[in-house]
Amino acid sequence: MRRRNLLVLSLLLVFSTALTAADISGKWTAQVPGRDGTPRTNTFQLKADGDKVTGTVDAGRGEPAAIADGKISGDSVSFTLTREFNGNTIKWTYTGTVSGNEIKFKRTGGQGEPREFTAKRAE
Image 1 (cartoon, rainbow, N blue to C red):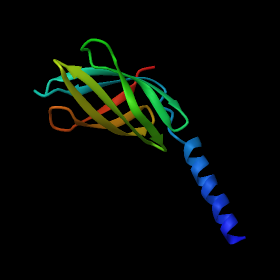
Image 2 (tube, rainbow, N blue to C red):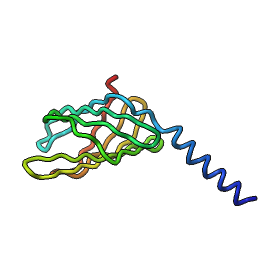
Image 3 (cartoon, rainbow, N blue to C red):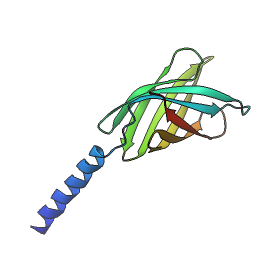
Image 4 (cartoon, rainbow, N blue to C red):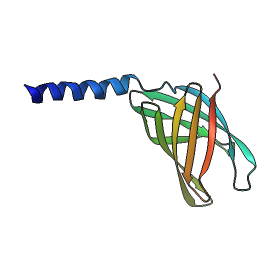
C-alpha cells in the first residue's frame, strides 16, 4: 500500500510539473552581445507543447535556424541551435530561466565565450 501511494504521488509530481511549465510560446527578442561586444538583435519564435520546445532563432544572418532538443520544465528552458558557416558546423546550447515576460538566457558553444542576455516577449 505504501509503495502504491508513493507511485501515485510521484506521477502527480511529474504531471503537475508539466502542467505548470512556463508559457513561452510566441515571439521574443533580445540584444545578444557579439564577439566584439556589439549587441545584435536576435528574434526567437518559440512553441511549447507539453515539455517540448520547437521554433526558430533569427540572428539577422540569413534564414532563421531551427532549434533542436528543446525542453521546458517549470521555469527552465533549453535547446540547441546548429548553423553552417563557410563549410563549418557551429553548435550553440541555450539554457534559460523564464520569469513573466522575460527569459534570462546563457548561450554556450560556438566560437566564443559564453554569452548571457535577456529575451523579452515581443507579442
